[in-house]
Length: 88
Image (tube, rainbow, N blue to C red; front, side, top):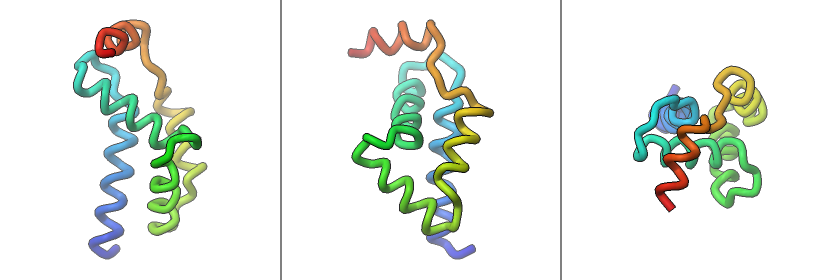
């Protein structure tokens, strides 16, 4: 794997990690929401970047998305939603 592929893999891995955050830190919840949006929301203007990154490293975007949805449950808990409402 070349340097660029390692970098892209690290970016996607960090987004998956951020999407799976279960704590209540306001800062980390912002990252969680952003990562979920980037990975799963096809209407997000930056979603194409995610798809392009996956293509560049030979990974199916839908496979990553399915794994995130099934194994990580990237939804905000009730408490996390309350915290996020306080940020707006």
